[in-house]
Image (cartoon, rainbow over all chains, first blue to last red):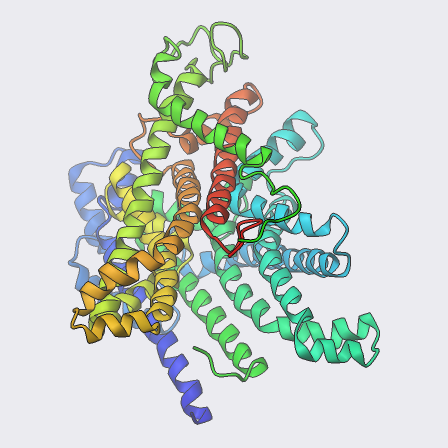
Length: 303
Length: 282
């Protein structure tokens, strides 16, 4: 396959995915019973006339396809309209919330990757220690124990029983919880892959040449594990965005997750629509990037 | 058959046995829990709020004086039903629809797989949040949301196994004998990938239960008057200082239950896989 086509096809596919999700999200949100005026009316005792006027002004009463077309033009220029609840431009709200989410996701991904790496490499280097058992334990922990339960347990123990620190608003506690969760998902496949690489012919040849264990490890074993790591990382980053949603709500962090939940409960559809498009684009971009890197480091054709 | 020299390891080690016991306990609680305490899970008793566990209220009361044990039992019922229902829908869509689409080939195949790709491009919890918001809230909406969230995972595994099995000689033989694509899939491929599907079920079910709890925790679960574990956690979290036990009980129950479920699943998986069975002489 020529290089240009190899690049163009995934790009087209990614664009198609984002477009399809945008439409699907619009349909979903359009089907939500009740609108923002219902929510405002509950809070502010609006009369029926006031409600009708408000609907007219906000344009929430118009048919779905009209709303979609009116939304699409500015959206393509990066303008997602006004939040119905906060009265601020949606893009401003998202820009303010994005750093928190990125910090949380980035921190937990970095720490998680490092943890997984240290434990997996350690378990390979010291097969008779407790480290291989730790690989299994961290893996089971991450699969089975929900992060939001760990989060609540952390709040209970540190903030209320021990009275150490105000955990609410703290970024590091949720980041660490998510990091351990992420490490658990990464460590087992990484360990399995490294183990397999150890028995590979080129590694045995290197050992026969009398190279040091370190040199074998860094130069001959690790590069073989990079494709697996890349594939896992892209899946992991998408999962991390999801995990950070609940953590933000739990720890009162003003990120995209808290914004999403506010938008759902307040029927603030311009905000919700924009968040969905933003997250979907993020995930698709991450996947496309990982895919590209995967092709670069692993030239073997894939199934 | 070669006899192994060392005694084979037990089929059910202590840890897995304890996990199986705990899963059984939760099942019993869900079924018979309503006869365990005389209290109604919804009945408020404002004279005895935030009580610590004692002889009357075995697990104490919450900020509205509701019996925590009664709510735990009612919650177990709802959480289990929704989780199992969600997992069933995920399998119906991912495995059922997925296999039919794979068997019949394009254009259905591309359509169905493309749909699953679409769902996969969003963080799972966001798909669930959108769907529950779009459908009116209730256990049915949550089940459907869980199903659609986890169906792509099932479909991905089914796609891989299907590709592997179709390359096998027995499939080609069955086709030569004149069986239709659907018949080959149903009679020959499905039995051969049943083990993989079982493994997948053991992975999906705990995740469905956790996601259900997260949704109810975020206030997007079933109707507000039915307690589920996630809802109990959300309710009690605001009063964690006055009644920490009311939070700790459902949090512990949920964590231990999903942990046990995963351990039991892993055990069943390795027992069902003859290659992994310790001391197996095949």
